[in-house]
Amino acid sequence: MRKRPRIAVSLGDPSGIGAEVTARALAALRAEVTPFVYGDPRSFARELAALRLPVVPLGAPLPARGALVAVTRLPASAVRPGKPVQAGGAAQLAFLEAAFAA
Image 1 (tube, rainbow, N blue to C red):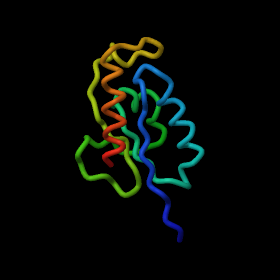
Image 2 (image 1 turned 90 degrees about the vertical axis):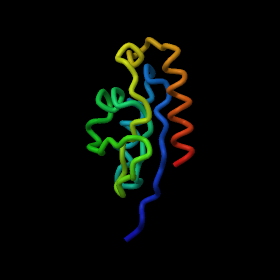
Image 3 (image 1 turned 120 degrees about the vertical axis):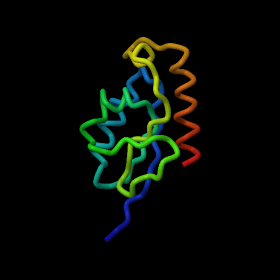
């Protein structure tokens, strides 16, 4: 049996389309990769619930079959599609740094 490669994905701007694009890409590739998605739980709930990956806090042990890693806990006002805010910019950097550190 072939071991699936582990990939780290940063969701990007919480008010952008990164979560939607990630959900579609991972749905197509789910049998090929073990995904670890770094972002905000509000984005996970909105776009990534169908992947049925566990949500784990940053720093927790990562499950062998992949996970949604909660890096931030943004207010709803910072995760409105098409309405970018300054907190979203800081969150993007935090997602990227966490994914690289993984």
